Length: 155
Length: 351
Image (tube, rainbow over all chains, first blue to last red; front, side):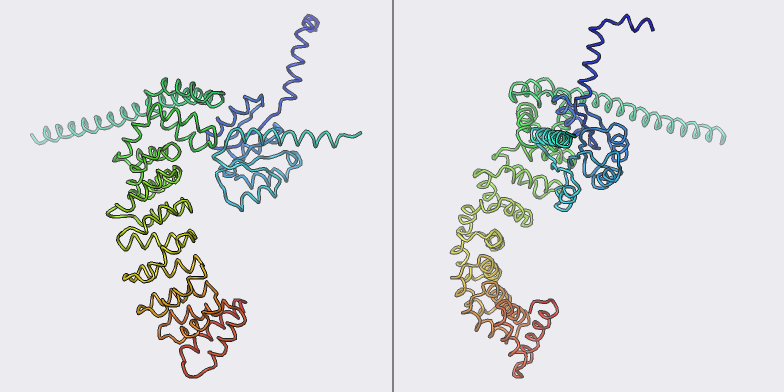
């Protein structure tokens, strides 16, 4: 009890500021079985100060999405276990996760898969991808989500 | 005495088995150690590469990376293949610099490797990083296994400069055993850009099978600028070339070709006649209706079949003509064909 009072105010402010920054830093859940894509995307995301949570498969990704409530999910449409479209439908069915924005990242340039993903409310980026375009899309999605949240704030 | 022999044999077998197991065990240990070491090198290289990719300057850091890691060529190749397949756009530029300044020469040599996996790994790197002058090496791989052939095709179409196309056409013209399927895929992927090269090749005295592919490509790629060059083959002595010319004219749909196609309907070979009739059907020139009507009375089934559907393509007028022919009694074969076409139209809702 006494030790609490001994913590300098400056340190407490620092801790508080760090916690606030962590709260504001967007968190991205990356679901991809390919380690190269995982490392590449997470490197670019971290460089932009995003917090990256990685999952190598669909079922693991769903678990992390429910548990961590990220601001955005980047999902490989051909992820093992639960594939991208199944993942999307399971995500939208869950009250906890239905509002999370999703960006599909896949080497499948199949028209049907792209249309289904877009219909389900997910954006789509085809592999191989330009990191600059991917980052621009990520930022746009997060900006849209923030704007939407601000618009819906009660007056 | 016997027991000693048995004992020695047993000991010998035991020794052999033990040494064999020891060899397998030692080999596995060596491989695992190498894999672990490669994994560590790969991870370190990957970290460095990611720094290069996120840097503002592509050239300097990429060259420094190449200098630092060029000694571990197999790992570097694996890393470049993985990142080449994941990245697009400007992000490929540092990879190109690394490839150019470290392993290009070795990869080029290893395109001739007896191992399929090695050839595939190397040709994959050339998909994005090949130069026009390297088309010669890549074309040789068109005779390789399908997976290598596909990668070589991707590499060739990726460097579709004027120089590369010129090299590809030279190779095609001089190839003693051309893989026509592979070449048609290349031409198809290159698209309408090949028109000047195709024109030049069509005017050369090439073997008929090569000319046949070129004529076919002119039609398939809708190169109407090559109309005059294609028409020339309508009177060629080789039957196959006349067939290809008729087919291409049916795709190019130049109105002036109706006269050539009408002339081909009187060709001595039924295959040429059938193709010419089919192309006339595509052309849908009212002046050719009498030719199609006449062809419906041909003794050859294929010619009658194409004429029937050619007439049907004219809509109501064609259908009425077919109905009339189906009712006449003079030529049972023409009547049957007309009836069959009408039945098909009714069944498929085309009437």
